[in-house]
Amino acid sequence: MAEADPYAFNDDGTAKDPKAFQQALRADAERMAALDAEPAVKSVVLGDDMFAFQELIKGVYHVRPPAARSGGRGCLSSARAAAPARRTRRSARSGRARRCPSAR
Image (tube, rainbow, N blue to C red):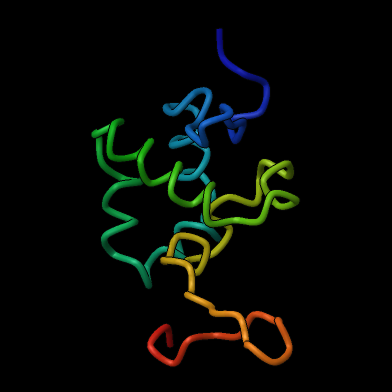
């Protein structure tokens, strides 16, 4: 039985219905255009390897903040979502996170 929301996630970050998730991404012209900047990601989205697709989705899920995860449709909304997360470090003085120079 297919899920009503093709972008629904399992607790581990995998897609509940990976084929429906993949088909929904393929049908979204804006998201596919955004993935032009990420050819490796786009090839997984267009490919037939469901294991690789689930690993991609899981990686994106764990990179996104918890509040954004519940939105469902936000996954892979841009090529940046599929890109590796920028590394940060805490400043010893302020305790605030800041980007590491090597993460640019």
